[in-house]
Image (cartoon, helix red, strand yellow):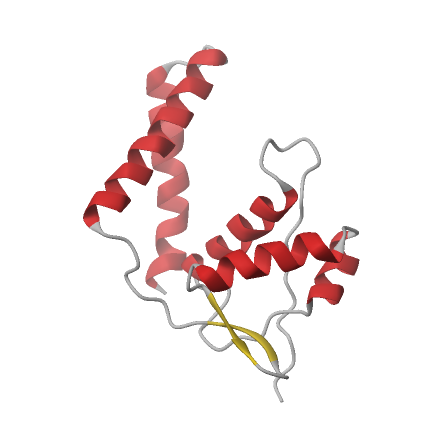
Length: 136
């Protein structure tokens, strides 16, 4: 039996997302960036809850959402593993989510009175920093 892959994730108490949402986002990002590979075994609910010092029900909720979304698969008696990633979103759904993310971002930078060109430059830099990891 394979050993669980250590998850170097953290949660932020001041984050507007729920704790489970932060875990979901962190794991999806690690899968997307290649830090977690197909077949990697995740820590147990109790193990991750202890690591993050949170209620196990929160981790169970996050894991259930990741299983429902096709990011993880459960193997009875063995644990949770990173599932083979499929192109899970239709073009319509992808565009809807992209528009929603852009709206959230724009509202945030307007609220902090950030120069739009500075914001665009930082987005470019952040995406550029991700590129080598995604193509590896």
